[in-house]
Amino acid sequence: MNRKGLLLLALVSAVLGLGGLFLASIWLDGHPEETALLTLTGEVKGINSKGKTTFIKIIPSSELLVVSFKNLDVQKGEIVTLAGRLQEYQGRVEFVAEKVK
Image (cartoon, rainbow, N blue to C red; front, side):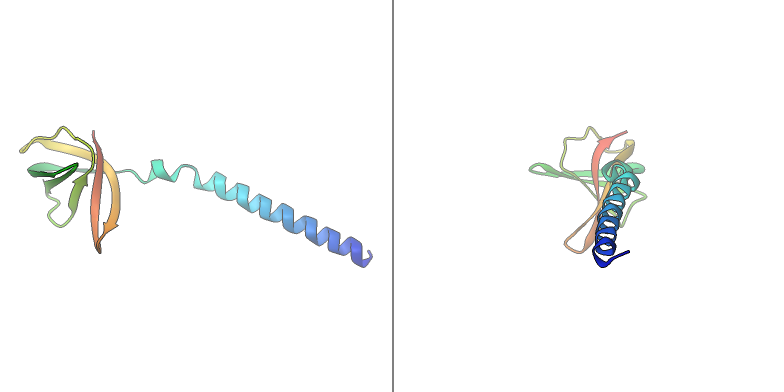
């Protein structure tokens, strides 16, 4: 095989390989926004609203701050299961609740 043929073969292999890796990464990742949803269950001990942000104290989650930017229908003393995501804010991990299950 001559030099031009070898160069063409290498170029085509590299392009196909990179394209294959790109497609494989999309296929393997799926929908990360759907898989990252977690649940937290506990008794609502306190609710504090500041503007559009609601802070919910849930027991037994004493160290985890629960925050919601949506209007969730929860009452003090109620046992709830919240669905949301973990997020870091100002060096602390908080649970951002998106909905009540």
